[in-house]
Image (cartoon, rainbow, N blue to C red; front, side, top):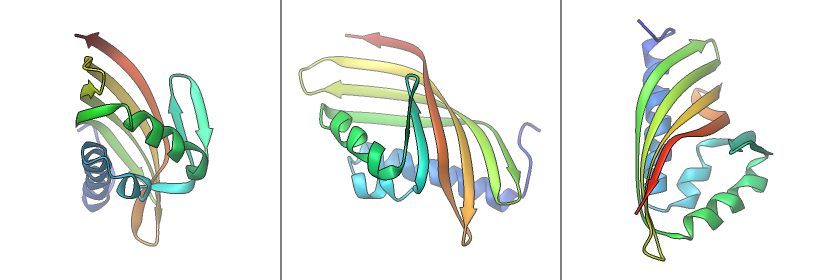
Length: 135
């Protein structure tokens, strides 16, 4: 088995990632932000931004360039240790930019989570592009 820890926690972490992806596909910034701790760190392309108030505008700006986003995750290992956890996710993205450019991206998230008052949140998400094509 590649994952470990209580099944109910691993399921809740999967639902957190599903909630994140759903918010991306619906362009719902409020729902997207609700998945993060206020002091979380978001790492994109070697740039680490700490604090939801600091990285949420980055997400809003990026999403403003798309007319459609398909965002689908496949789980790697999810390892729960008490109120902390780590997981790997492989992400398929189908991005339609407003200028007509279409991109397909395969990426990998390395996530750290924290459980607060019975709910899991992202504490750190590090994203790396594994493959990308454009048409």
